[in-house]
Image 1: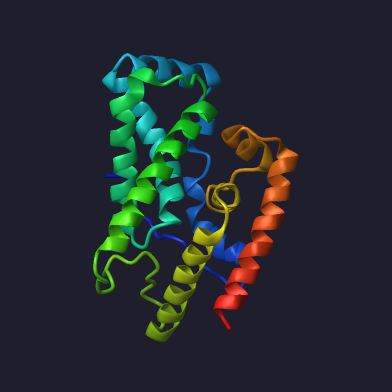
Image 2 (image 1 turned 120 degrees about the vertical axis):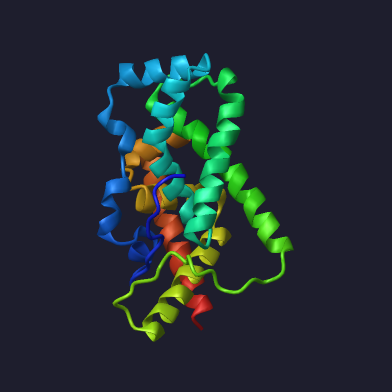
Length: 217
Protein backbone atom coordinates (compact mmCIF):
# COMPACT_ATOMS: atom_id res chain seq x y z
CA UNK A 1 0.00 0.00 0.00
CA UNK A 2 1.06 3.56 -0.54
CA UNK A 3 1.36 6.26 2.07
CA UNK A 4 -1.66 7.13 4.19
CA UNK A 5 -2.36 10.81 4.34
CA UNK A 6 -5.12 13.33 4.84
CA UNK A 7 -7.15 14.12 1.75
CA UNK A 8 -8.78 17.18 0.31
CA UNK A 9 -9.09 19.82 2.99
CA UNK A 10 -11.19 22.80 1.88
CA UNK A 11 -10.97 26.39 2.98
CA UNK A 12 -13.14 29.40 2.23
CA UNK A 13 -12.11 29.97 -1.38
CA UNK A 14 -12.52 27.67 -4.37
CA UNK A 15 -8.80 27.52 -5.07
CA UNK A 16 -8.00 26.62 -1.46
CA UNK A 17 -10.81 24.09 -1.31
CA UNK A 18 -9.23 22.22 -4.17
CA UNK A 19 -5.63 22.77 -3.11
CA UNK A 20 -5.76 21.47 0.46
CA UNK A 21 -3.33 22.43 3.20
CA UNK A 22 0.40 23.00 2.88
CA UNK A 23 1.29 19.91 4.94
CA UNK A 24 0.92 17.79 1.80
CA UNK A 25 3.67 19.62 -0.04
CA UNK A 26 5.75 16.45 0.32
CA UNK A 27 3.56 14.67 -2.21
CA UNK A 28 4.34 17.01 -5.11
CA UNK A 29 6.81 16.43 -7.91
CA UNK A 30 8.26 13.15 -6.68
CA UNK A 31 9.69 12.07 -10.02
CA UNK A 32 11.31 15.40 -10.77
CA UNK A 33 14.34 14.66 -8.59
CA UNK A 34 15.51 11.94 -11.00
CA UNK A 35 17.32 12.75 -14.22
CA UNK A 36 15.63 12.24 -17.58
CA UNK A 37 18.06 9.51 -18.59
CA UNK A 38 17.60 7.73 -15.28
CA UNK A 39 13.80 7.71 -15.59
CA UNK A 40 14.03 6.65 -19.23
CA UNK A 41 16.23 3.73 -18.16
CA UNK A 42 13.75 2.60 -15.52
CA UNK A 43 10.92 2.78 -18.06
CA UNK A 44 12.86 0.76 -20.63
CA UNK A 45 13.72 -1.94 -18.10
CA UNK A 46 10.17 -1.99 -16.70
CA UNK A 47 8.88 -2.48 -20.24
CA UNK A 48 11.03 -5.64 -20.31
CA UNK A 49 9.44 -6.70 -16.99
CA UNK A 50 12.40 -5.83 -14.80
CA UNK A 51 10.89 -6.02 -11.30
CA UNK A 52 13.46 -3.67 -9.76
CA UNK A 53 12.86 -0.94 -12.33
CA UNK A 54 9.09 -1.25 -11.96
CA UNK A 55 9.38 -1.05 -8.19
CA UNK A 56 11.45 2.13 -8.52
CA UNK A 57 8.85 3.73 -10.78
CA UNK A 58 6.06 2.62 -8.46
CA UNK A 59 7.71 4.09 -5.38
CA UNK A 60 8.30 7.39 -7.13
CA UNK A 61 4.99 7.74 -8.97
CA UNK A 62 2.55 6.35 -6.41
CA UNK A 63 2.19 9.60 -4.39
CA UNK A 64 1.18 11.58 -7.48
CA UNK A 65 -1.28 8.93 -8.65
CA UNK A 66 -2.69 8.62 -5.13
CA UNK A 67 -3.13 12.39 -4.87
CA UNK A 68 -4.74 12.51 -8.32
CA UNK A 69 -7.23 9.82 -7.28
CA UNK A 70 -7.94 11.16 -3.78
CA UNK A 71 -9.58 14.33 -5.08
CA UNK A 72 -12.34 12.24 -6.67
CA UNK A 73 -13.08 9.64 -3.97
CA UNK A 74 -14.35 9.86 -0.41
CA UNK A 75 -11.88 8.14 1.87
CA UNK A 76 -8.22 7.34 2.37
CA UNK A 77 -8.98 3.64 1.95
CA UNK A 78 -10.78 4.18 -1.36
CA UNK A 79 -7.96 6.36 -2.67
CA UNK A 80 -5.36 3.74 -1.79
CA UNK A 81 -7.41 0.93 -3.33
CA UNK A 82 -8.02 2.79 -6.59
CA UNK A 83 -4.39 3.89 -6.82
CA UNK A 84 -3.30 0.27 -6.39
CA UNK A 85 -5.75 -0.73 -9.14
CA UNK A 86 -4.08 1.84 -11.40
CA UNK A 87 -0.67 0.26 -10.91
CA UNK A 88 -2.00 -3.27 -11.29
CA UNK A 89 -3.60 -2.23 -14.58
CA UNK A 90 -0.40 -0.49 -15.63
CA UNK A 91 1.70 -3.55 -14.83
CA UNK A 92 -0.52 -5.71 -17.02
CA UNK A 93 0.10 -3.45 -20.03
CA UNK A 94 3.61 -2.13 -19.34
CA UNK A 95 5.04 -4.24 -22.16
CA UNK A 96 3.25 -2.04 -24.68
CA UNK A 97 4.13 1.27 -22.97
CA UNK A 98 5.43 3.79 -25.52
CA UNK A 99 6.46 6.54 -23.11
CA UNK A 100 10.16 7.17 -22.68
CA UNK A 101 10.04 10.16 -20.31
CA UNK A 102 8.72 11.10 -16.89
CA UNK A 103 5.92 13.20 -18.38
CA UNK A 104 4.91 10.46 -20.78
CA UNK A 105 4.92 7.87 -18.01
CA UNK A 106 2.75 10.03 -15.75
CA UNK A 107 0.37 10.86 -18.59
CA UNK A 108 -0.03 7.11 -19.19
CA UNK A 109 -0.72 6.45 -15.50
CA UNK A 110 -3.25 9.29 -15.29
CA UNK A 111 -5.07 7.92 -18.32
CA UNK A 112 -5.39 4.55 -16.57
CA UNK A 113 -6.42 6.36 -13.37
CA UNK A 114 -9.28 8.12 -15.16
CA UNK A 115 -10.74 4.76 -16.17
CA UNK A 116 -10.25 3.25 -12.71
CA UNK A 117 -11.88 6.25 -11.03
CA UNK A 118 -14.85 6.01 -13.41
CA UNK A 119 -15.20 2.29 -12.65
CA UNK A 120 -15.03 2.98 -8.93
CA UNK A 121 -17.65 5.74 -9.08
CA UNK A 122 -19.99 3.52 -11.11
CA UNK A 123 -19.66 0.73 -8.54
CA UNK A 124 -20.25 3.22 -5.75
CA UNK A 125 -23.34 4.60 -7.49
CA UNK A 126 -24.84 1.12 -7.78
CA UNK A 127 -24.27 0.32 -4.10
CA UNK A 128 -26.74 1.43 -1.41
CA UNK A 129 -25.74 4.43 0.67
CA UNK A 130 -23.23 3.39 3.29
CA UNK A 131 -22.56 4.90 6.75
CA UNK A 132 -19.68 7.33 7.10
CA UNK A 133 -16.34 5.55 6.95
CA UNK A 134 -14.18 5.99 10.09
CA UNK A 135 -11.23 6.51 7.69
CA UNK A 136 -12.75 9.65 6.19
CA UNK A 137 -9.78 11.68 5.15
CA UNK A 138 -10.44 14.97 6.87
CA UNK A 139 -10.53 14.25 10.58
CA UNK A 140 -8.45 16.39 12.90
CA UNK A 141 -8.45 15.35 16.60
CA UNK A 142 -8.07 18.98 17.69
CA UNK A 143 -11.08 20.14 15.69
CA UNK A 144 -14.56 20.42 17.16
CA UNK A 145 -17.05 17.79 15.85
CA UNK A 146 -19.36 20.47 14.47
CA UNK A 147 -16.47 21.98 12.48
CA UNK A 148 -15.58 18.55 11.10
CA UNK A 149 -19.15 18.10 9.89
CA UNK A 150 -19.06 21.45 8.09
CA UNK A 151 -15.76 20.56 6.50
CA UNK A 152 -17.03 17.15 5.38
CA UNK A 153 -19.93 18.91 3.67
CA UNK A 154 -17.50 21.26 1.90
CA UNK A 155 -15.31 18.38 0.74
CA UNK A 156 -18.29 16.59 -0.76
CA UNK A 157 -19.51 19.82 -2.35
CA UNK A 158 -16.16 20.30 -4.12
CA UNK A 159 -16.04 16.71 -5.34
CA UNK A 160 -19.58 17.00 -6.65
CA UNK A 161 -18.72 20.29 -8.35
CA UNK A 162 -15.60 18.79 -9.98
CA UNK A 163 -17.79 16.09 -11.50
CA UNK A 164 -19.80 18.80 -13.30
CA UNK A 165 -16.76 20.27 -15.05
CA UNK A 166 -15.67 19.16 -18.50
CA UNK A 167 -13.02 16.44 -18.54
CA UNK A 168 -10.31 18.90 -19.60
CA UNK A 169 -11.29 21.49 -16.99
CA UNK A 170 -11.26 18.86 -14.25
CA UNK A 171 -7.85 17.57 -15.31
CA UNK A 172 -6.39 21.07 -15.18
CA UNK A 173 -7.85 21.82 -11.76
CA UNK A 174 -6.63 18.55 -10.25
CA UNK A 175 -3.15 18.86 -11.73
CA UNK A 176 -2.74 22.54 -10.87
CA UNK A 177 -4.21 22.57 -7.36
CA UNK A 178 -3.86 19.02 -6.09
CA UNK A 179 -0.63 17.91 -7.74
CA UNK A 180 0.87 21.40 -7.70
CA UNK A 181 1.96 21.36 -11.35
CA UNK A 182 2.70 24.62 -13.16
CA UNK A 183 1.11 25.43 -16.52
CA UNK A 184 4.06 24.10 -18.49
CA UNK A 185 3.96 20.73 -16.75
CA UNK A 186 0.18 20.38 -17.09
CA UNK A 187 0.51 21.32 -20.75
CA UNK A 188 3.12 18.60 -21.28
CA UNK A 189 0.99 15.93 -19.58
CA UNK A 190 -2.19 16.89 -21.46
CA UNK A 191 -0.55 17.66 -24.80
CA UNK A 192 -1.63 21.30 -24.88
CA UNK A 193 0.01 24.72 -24.82
CA UNK A 194 0.54 26.60 -21.53
CA UNK A 195 -1.76 29.32 -22.84
CA UNK A 196 -4.54 26.81 -23.40
CA UNK A 197 -4.05 25.49 -19.87
CA UNK A 198 -4.32 29.00 -18.46
CA UNK A 199 -7.61 29.53 -20.31
CA UNK A 200 -8.96 26.17 -19.15
CA UNK A 201 -8.04 27.00 -15.56
CA UNK A 202 -9.76 30.38 -15.74
CA UNK A 203 -12.96 28.84 -17.13
CA UNK A 204 -12.85 25.93 -14.69
CA UNK A 205 -12.47 28.12 -11.61
CA UNK A 206 -15.32 30.31 -12.77
CA UNK A 207 -17.50 27.25 -13.32
CA UNK A 208 -16.57 25.83 -9.90
CA UNK A 209 -17.50 29.07 -8.15
CA UNK A 210 -20.87 29.17 -9.91
CA UNK A 211 -21.59 25.52 -9.11
CA UNK A 212 -20.65 25.94 -5.44
CA UNK A 213 -22.64 29.15 -5.11
CA UNK A 214 -25.67 27.46 -6.66
CA UNK A 215 -25.29 24.44 -4.35
CA UNK A 216 -25.01 26.74 -1.34
CA UNK A 217 -28.27 28.39 -2.20
